[in-house]
Image (tube, rainbow, N blue to C red):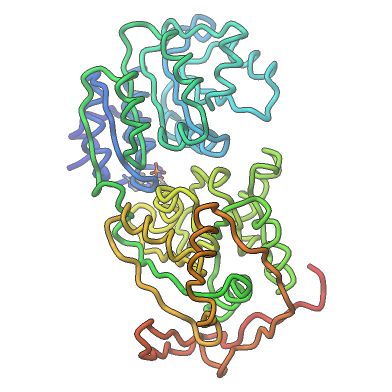
Length: 442
Ligand code: AMP
C-alpha cells in the first residue's frame, strides 16, 4: 500500500517523500481514506504510530482550496493537551504543507496573546492550540463558525489535565456540520463519554491491542530500594554506555532532586516539568535533541508529545500515578517501528502499582535485580504500613546518602539476577566502570 493509493495528492506526496516516509503506517492506512471521505473517527493509537500524519495529511488535503490570504477564515483546529505537543504538531504540519499555500499557526500559553492575535488577523487556515489558550482567543472574538475539521489529539491526557470544560465550551461554537477526529492513546470511560458528545457516527479505529505498549519495546523492571534508585540509575547509564535516556519521575520535586543527584555523578542532565517556563522547556528539549544533554528528566505532563528520533531508552525512575501514563511514557521509545527499551525502577511500594500497569498493558513485565542493588529483604511488606502508604500514594521521605559508585562486585557490566535467583552474567560493555563522582562542577 502506498500513500498514492490512499488518495493523497501530489503536493503532500512530495513533502512526505522529503521526510523519508515511504509507506503509510497502520493508522495512516486506516485513517487517511476515512478523513478524506469526511467521516468522524475515533482512533486509539499510541504516540509513535504516525498518528500526526494520519490526521494532518488528510486535513491539509481537505482544506487545500484556499482564498487570498486576507480573506482566509479559520477552517481547521487541532487541539492538543500541551505546549510541547502543539509545537511538535505545528512543525509537522508545516513540513507536510510546505508545497501548499495553507497557513498554519500555533496558539499556546506562555506566548504573547496579542502577537498571536496579530497573526490570526493576517488570515490563518489552521490552528494548533492548547484548550486554555484557544478559549482565551475565543473570548477575545476568534470566530469558529467556519471550522470544517476539528481534531482532538491525546484526548485522554487532555481530560486528565482537566480540559473537559474547555472542550465542552468550544464544541457548541463550531458549525453544526463539521468533521471531528478524536485520537487517544488509551480508551478510558472519560474518553468514551467525550466521544459521545463530540462525534457523529464515528468509525472506530483501534491500531494495536487495547492499551498495549508498542511491540518492539523491551520492558523490564529492576527491584531496588527507594534510597538506592538514584545510584542504580547513574550506574546503569554509566556502565551500559547509554547514549541518551529519558527518565520519568512522578513529581516535580523528585525530578528536581534526581537531577541534583545525577549532576553530582557527573552526568549532563536537563529537566522538563510544569514549573519551567515554555522557553526553558523548549531550550532543554532542543539541547537533548542535539545530543548536548545525555539525560532528560521529565514529569508526565511536561513530557507529552516529545518526539525524539531514535530514542532507545526510557527509564521510569518512579512509576506513574495513573497506569495509562506508562503507555505514554514507554511510547517515547521504539518509535515508528524501531527497537527500544523501557526500564522501570521498582521499590517495595511500587510493587502494587506495577500490577495495575500490567493489567492495562495485558502482559507481565519481567522483574529482575542488579547485583549490588538488591532490595533489602527486611523491607518487604511491612503490610499494614505499606498498604496505607500505597493508598495514600505517599512515599517515605527519600534520604540520599553518599554512595559507593563503583561496580558492586567486579569491574564487569552489571550482572543481572533473575528474581528466581539464577544469575545471568551480562557480557562486559566497552566502558566497564560505573560513572565516577565528578570532582568538577559541570
Ligand atoms: P507520531 O506518532 O505522529 O508522533 O509519529 C512518530 C514518528 O514517526 C515521527 O517522527 C514521524 O515523523 C514518523 N513517521 C510518521 N509516519 C511515518 C511513515 N509513514 N514512515 C516513516 N516515519 C513516519
